[in-house]
Image (cartoon, rainbow, N blue to C red; front, side, top):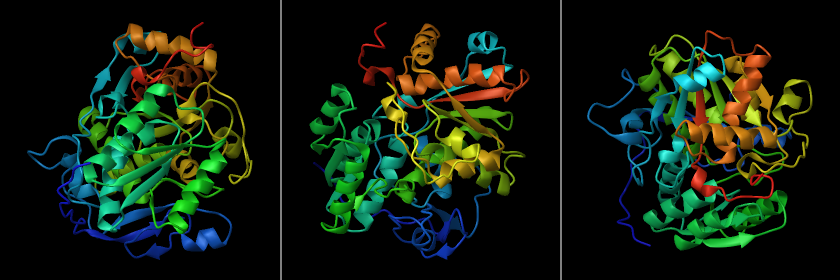
Length: 393
């Protein structure tokens, strides 16, 4: 591990935090268990950053990558490996195949560790350093662990990643090669129990949720994911109608919504695109139909990055406030569409390829119209997937 232990300053405009459910105003700080009031009421909810002023321009002139949007983020600088600036590619052939006006692929697999998680890891480890932590810990299905392990190494932090049997060997190797400790447990809830123990009893800095019902990941890290919205505003302008997001517990879909909400509040865009969650079995779709958000929604899937049996309030809020929804996709159809993506030049992890399957379904049921411009968030590179019995068919 190497690090210059550089001091990274908070954004001068950061004035505090607020609960995304009840709106309670909080001081700048670490809220690993979300809003204290909502937690005590048995309805855990994430917090977000509040700023005294929003930037007058979308990007900082001359800056590159995610640093272009530093004025929108809680830190003015951070531990960086060159994250951001991922391409947003128009694919006319996919638009024709799905009878859509325009289809854009936002290729987050071009980040340093091969997934969108880098945009969160860079700010999470920066916050851990600021808090004086020596070790950072996370529960992960694979991508977050690989990303956090790399950024922790760059920051000079010790790192523990708690996983189930789900992550493929290539992701396990990425974690251990970076020097992180890899701990395997039987199920997702045991992951959370271990992270909770390390955070509460050993003073480790938790990068991810450990509650059940859950909240989002570290809110400083989630803020980094808002940069996708700022990039899309530059790359696609105000013409995006709908965005499809592979989703488990909703860090990404919430952050994209919050980024566009801020852009609209600052007058940089006129409307917020509809956000659609893509999930491998009914979870958020059941909540939108009336099920209790704090319930359990088990299911089986080969899409390990978006598995999990819980729903967060942040994902509900993002789709409802944007006028979007949720779509359930079938593993076999996703495997087919991963091949379709590759034949158009995109080698994506199955969970990322699920956006194309979701688009087909949303076009069929009319939730996305033929004259709309659609962005597919390709969350992770396909080299992270290894053949499984179903995927090999």
